Image (cartoon, rainbow over all chains, first blue to last red; front, side, top):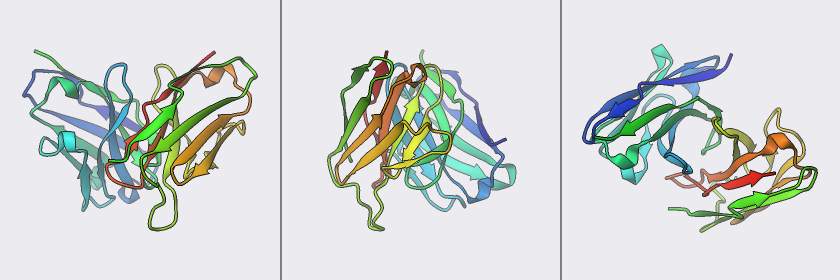
Length: 118
Length: 111
């Protein structure tokens, strides 16, 4: 079965750090571009980061540059998002997704929730 | 950044009636390869998003044929020919022509 399963979310204080993980199965992970998209409570979707199939290229939205780092381990079929210097506005459900090309995410995970609060 | 403006933001519809959502881009979404990377997603209440349409008009496998996408350049439309109860949710357009990829604000479809 093709699926993505995120984990690692939780309640964290402002300024703190977390590492989100996304476990992939059912497809050739090592050939797939992967993305992280987030959704603040009651709000719309926002692209966060994208990583090339071999990890050799990464891109970030301006609001997270320097604070978030996307990485992957193709041997473990896993995608990661290291998030640090967290702010209240980073509170959101974080989804990982397989990007079939230029934003056309065709597989979405269920999401993991990050809550930044003191 | 490319700004996508959806309208309407709220769309009350009657079962069996058609519905249409507009997505307008602040700049052309035609990529250098000639493709237009404009896609549509559906997010049902409490669920993850699901892709419906990719590259303007290509319907995903398993998506009912009552859904269709059209448009070019900066103006795009998602149409539902006859709304069913399972179509309730929020619909988003997104562009992948220029980084950062961006989403429209979302259109909430309700019966």
